[in-house]
Image (cartoon, rainbow, N blue to C red; front, side, top):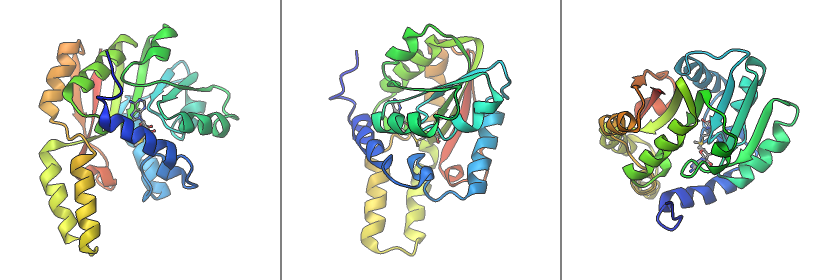
Length: 240
Ligand SMILES: C[S@@+](CC[C@H](N)C(=O)[O-])C[C@H]1O[C@@H](n2cnc3c(N)ncnc32)[C@H](O)[C@@H]1O
C-alpha cells in the first residue's frame, strides 16, 4: 500500500516536474537542461542499445516519459508507444506536443502503483524507464516499482533503465563540486540538493531485489562517456 505522505522525495519531485514542464527548454523537461543536440542523440543511442533494438511490431512502454520527447523519436520505429508520467502537467504537454504522432498514447500513471498501466492488460516486450529511480526514498519503493514493472512485462521482455544515481560514485561526484568556479553558497546548495533530494543506489542491492522479484537478468551497460550522467549514474537492463 502506497501512502503519498511517506513518499517524500517522490511527491517533492512531482511538484518540481509539474513546474519544469512550464519551461520553454524541452531538454529541461527531461532533466537535461545542459544537453546539446548531439548529447540528446547520444542518449538515444544508449537507449536503443540498452533496449537491444526495437522494430515495427514493438509496442513500447515509455515509463516516466515526461512530455514524450523520447516517445516521439521512437514513434516511426515501432507500432505504438504507450507513454506515462505521474506529472499531470507533463502529460498535458505530451498530449499537445505528441499530437501529430498518432501512435503515441500519453496517460497519467505512477510507477509506485501502475494502476492505469495494469488495467490495460498488456504485457510489454520492451520498456524504457528513463532517469526516474533517483526520486525515491527507500529500497522498498524500488522493490514496489520493479514488481509493478515485472507484472506488465512479457516473458523474456526487456526493460532498460537509464540514469540511476550510483552510490559507489556519490562521494567523488560530491567532491567534484569543490573544483567548480562557483560561489561558495551555490556549491553548498548544489551539494545539499544531491544529498537530500536524490536516492543514491547500490547496484548489488538493486540486483538482489531484481532477482527476488523474478527478473532472470539484471545487467549494467556502459553509458556514453560524453554524457553528464556518465560520471555518477549507471544504466542497466532487466530481462524477465
Ligand atoms: C529525469 S526525467 C526523465 C524523462 C525521460 N524519461 C528521459 O529519460 O529523458 C524523470 C521523469 O520521471 C518522472 N517520474 C518521477 N517519478 C515518477 C513516478 N513515481 N511515476 C511516474 N513518473 C515519474 C518525472 O515526472 C519526470 O518526467
